[in-house]
Image (cartoon, rainbow, N blue to C red; front, side, top):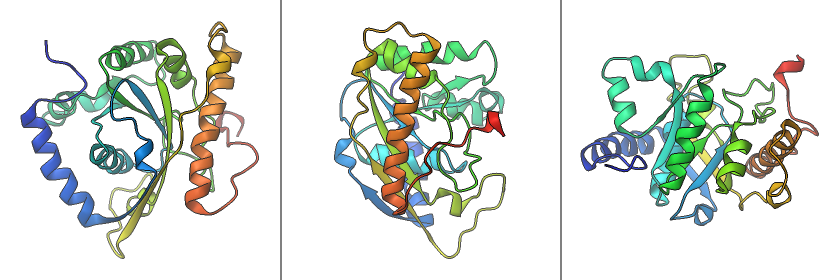
Length: 236
């Protein structure tokens, strides 16, 4: 059985010859600390989410640093003719957000981690609604996956994809040429949760630690101080 952490050679070449030239054409690169991306073994890449374009731009970054990203994608994409076939062939994991089926995506992600996959995880679950575009309060799926699997969590922050295609818009803003900034942090230390049952409070605390690490990388990229507490859409 073919491993589900990397597509067939045909699909990999097809994706690379389309994505890399397009990415290089549309945006400049400011990539920092790429050496912190583990080259082998199961790993969770936890990133902030700004635009519908950032999964593609981050995929380019990760590929150039030795990892094929296993992306968690909306299940609706898998039902679109042709696109669904491509998304499945590229090893994405379907996610039914807000349903009981969401647990299935975590189980599948755990299997991919066991096979040595690099899971690109957006803990916020959607593009940020924070007025300043800082990361929001994360959902606990990323912490549950990390604590159950024991996989490293690598925080990755990016900036600039929203300038190319702001959330909610359909037409990209191609000119002037934008720059895609990426910064990779050291692994998030979750050791204090290792021997604690994964109750809701534990998962929330671990998730907060992960999001704080992502936010710290974003603050470095932006050269700004992050808010004292993350935006919580549930309280708005």
